[in-house]
Length: 206
Image (tube, rainbow, N blue to C red):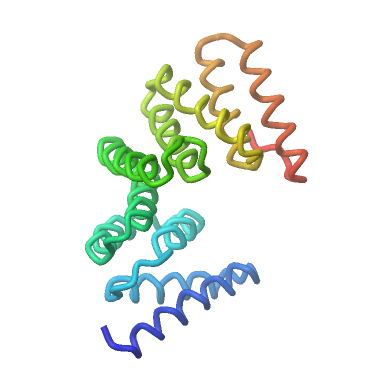
């Protein structure tokens, strides 16, 4: 990879970040295309999977990402970056309904992150547990989902990470309790989700 290509990829990444900050829809599409093309050639995986995953969800362009994530895994030996790629790949696979692939990637990401941080009380461990909980929820494995999502609540509580993802955890827990016909428990979860949204100045999303 030439210095020119490296500079081009860094410029494409920054252009996409700038477009996101401006909320320029056309520039976001163009920036995503440019970064996607660069990523297929780069030898530097730093932070690309997370950015591509987040924007790919926003643009509903998920089917293009697994091939890119697979390539990125071949160009990095950094465990933290490998875990990030696997986490994003698994999260995208959940959305694509590829549950077996999703579990494989997310379990690998979780294993690496637990080894890296030596504890579950870390935001990135919580993020992967959340994706695993969402996977089990989507697959109808509710007891497993509840166990995983409750672990996320414990982590967010310990680290004071009350944010929109926490609200999403409570919504999923509430929906599971509706399925179980425990409407009182469901209401408790929905009220907690609403409290998190209100604290963040965000309208509730149910």
